[in-house]
Image (cartoon, rainbow, N blue to C red; front, side):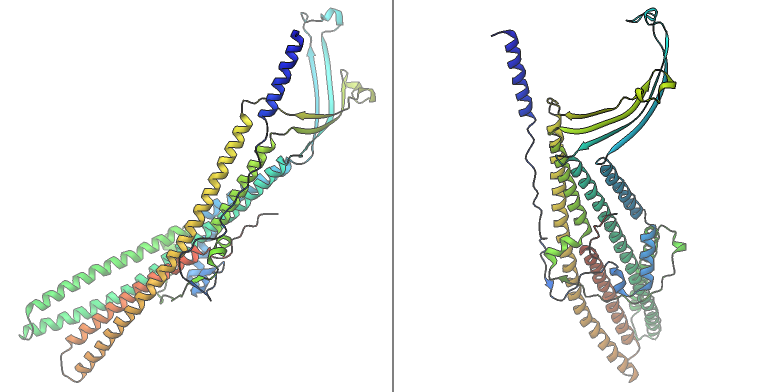
Length: 472
């Protein structure tokens, strides 16, 4: 066998090996969860929250606080910036799919070396001019869907960014609601504690008078003094909590506490939030974080399509309409034309595994996105179930505390009747009122727990349908 034949066979073998190495991977498919594993009792007549779910509490002050917070929050501004960035990615991907036309013009004056391959003495000149003017066009065919996949991935990322803005707004509205209702609860408990101190001071004065008349032991007054000090400590703590909630509201709105709108104490609402009957399936469509995760999966899947398309040749059509002349005065003449038309095919045979590495990286990113989606679904189910369980627990506690408060109120009524009938002194009536105030305070605390659980449920249910539309 001659050396020429051997070299030819070797070249064919290398070419076949290169083609085999560039065999594209199979298209990837993804199967995502179709329902959330919510382990909780659902109500048949329960409703999903609206987009502005906080308005169901009927508090104009809360409405104004949330609207101001959403309008000024840096988290919202950051989410909107990500949306704008994603929109530009879509435009960039779309621009890559179109026809590209470039215009170019140049004028060069250059001196030839006397020691070059062709001596200037032979050419007869040292300096020469070069003038070029032209318009070039290039169009790349997207036969393998690489550009379409890149466009779809950018669009999916834009949708994910839009959903993430809704996540930020939902979390902010929930945080403002929790801080506001905590302030209201602290205000109600402060009023009860202040009344408790008045009653305790009355009871202390009565005990001191009775001890002076040898009708009461002296240690009774000392015990009451301890109770007064303990209630003062509780009152100081509640005022600190109330101020802390104002600081929290100021931080959420991005303003100082001095510029917050006036907060007026008002009774806490009593929502009866329950899980909708179709919680398992509709939760996936209504949670904006799940929607964002799903769009991230879709974008990552399109990225694998883009990486897969690089295994196929790129085919582009190029055309040039131009003029070229070494004399500027002859540049615009017809005989200076240099038109060109051609087709280019690009298929690197050997890339040291670069294309497979890129496809592997895209596949790894897809797996990460799928894991993040599964985690978002499981977390959503857990949060919804936990909020519903907290509401049920608070409802059971409220029923028990209502019974305790009813008994305390009945004892107070009996004590008042005995005092009115002059069957006893004022002490039992004051003690019964203290017990009733304690029951009222416990009821405020359980109402706050139920209300915070309802806010958490609204957040867990997505706070309204997930908005996944992107710009046009």
